[in-house]
Amino acid sequence: MRLLHLGDLELTLPLAVAAGGWLLAARAWRAAGAWALLYAGAMALVGGSKVAYLGWGTDIGALDFKAFSGHAAGVTAVYPVLGYLLCRPIGRAWGLGAAGGGLALGLVLAVALVGQGEHAVAEAATGWLLGAGASLGTLYQLESRGVAPGPASAACAVALFLVAALLMQSAHVGYWMIRLALALSGNARPFSWDTC
Image (cartoon, helix red, strand yellow):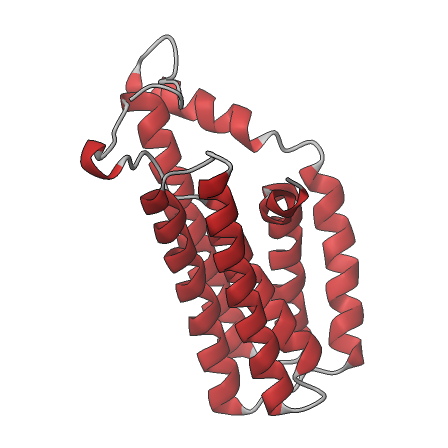
């Protein structure tokens, strides 16, 4: 299902970098700081939960929970913020509506992840909540200060997106998560996502 690719780290991380650059170019310092901390924190929780499962097989059997969904978290964090930044110059209602649309897109993606058997309900739901926390915390900082980023901010965001997307082509995040999990746990092989 192509919808699921909207949550690929190779797309959402460059978009997150672009959003941060947009906020910095708009001189929305607090919002940029909030975005950096909240997005990085959400992704650290996702990555940490995946490393814990790969290395030690940690899970919550009753909930069929192995790790937070990175796709659900990434979409729900990034798209509401970008929607807001794109539409806020038209008006506050447009910005908030676009942010709401981003949250809804994250929910649709979470449901699709469960429907396609990619994640359990608990994994998709908690991933969505992590992403929503990151985006809503950032939007709170933006709304409380009435920031409406302009075209120069968008140009900076596009440039950063292109650079980050290029760098992500050789990042191989999944490979490095497995290596980290094995190094920390001392195991010879990672736990399989298919077994629990």
